[in-house]
Image (tube, rainbow, N blue to C red; front, side, top):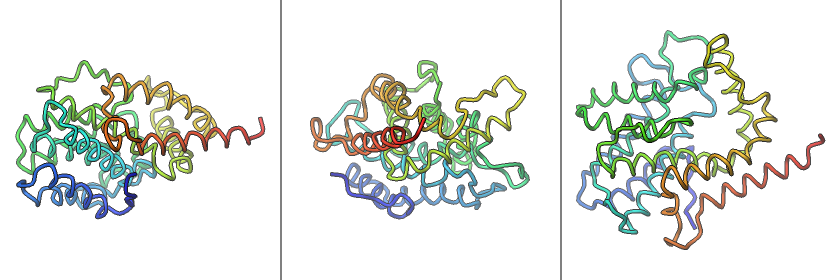
Length: 285
């Protein structure tokens, strides 16, 4: 059974990430994880350049931490299973940076006073990739490292064709797929996922309103209730095929023990889906 970690507490998540990092790479620079978290947290609290603190209510820093915790657990499980190609210290670092920065596309500059960052929902993946390039170039990362982080971030796009991403090698692809897996499972396994679905709908609604009159504008959901009703199908018809087929079943490395032990994330998600279905059954038509 997974130890519970408070994903509202960046220090608690950082501590587990640090422990996994040191377990995999005992002689690694022990300051890197804390630096990466410091950089990311500064971005989300409004201490980076001319950016405001995050004001998207669903895609907040806790959402990022949920994905981060899941991804590091997955990579650690894969490392323990001695899967090939073997995870390197460099790729661990780039993967951590990618997951920490994967939703920075929701951040607004200080002169951007209209609405919340949710209005950028349709383009947030590309904005996140651009933001990551800006930050990492300032931190003296080279072009190949920055491109790797950007392609990993692009794995989180709902409709992205993974075949067009030009990964530099198979390990980079694997870490990108681990990120895409963790972004989906981390949020859906959260104990308050069901309660936050109306907040997620509000983000979609704001994006639709902001893009009104453009080709990109389209109503995915007609109401919060509509989003909730479609959540079980989203899980069974999009998320599970995505993580099983497109992301090469990497979520199995979350099984404890691997390969046949229980999967904490799947159990939590299935419990959330069951709650949604019971809610829907109890709602008068």
